[in-house]
Image 1 (spheres, rainbow, N blue to C red):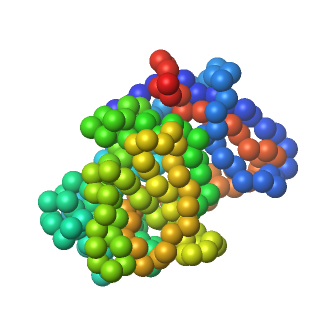
Image 2 (cartoon, rainbow, N blue to C red):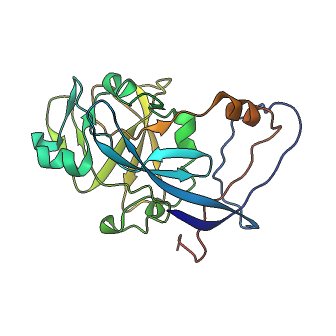
Image 3 (cartoon, rainbow, N blue to C red):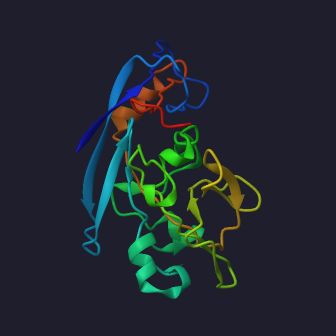
Length: 226
């Protein structure tokens, strides 16, 4: 399914960029448009079928990963929670949990979503509008002592980047906050994993050829961030 949304795109021409590209940044002068494209993916390792969503140039799994590895758990050790929210992984397990052709997104890759209002990422059942199709659910987290917290209330996601004290960068999604929260978390904690599809090398080279960061706004026709 393809969904048309309004989008703002500032084009830049020149030599390689010297600052990170963050394609989803608010710009009220929306003149162009892109397509949010829904799809599916079957994990050949266990046959599980995942919804996917293309947001701008990124293709995300639109569900939390539910692949069994060492050092991963269902919330409260209940299989029904895995079916609903996916598994919770320590950071080391999360790094290699995604299937071939997909990967644990870096902090920079997560930053593409940081400017999107949080309710545009959350499901309608979690007081969101979900206009992006990201389908975020409150899977909670597992503390390193084996206890579980905030299931049904908060969502926590790992990134692959660990250049922060106390451990690795992640994202937190709270119903009361207007955007994703970027924080450093202890690696033994159990968080959800959202896999991001690998990008062809030719696409990466095209991005590096830009002299400044394009500003791309995912903003539906009809206001979503009030």
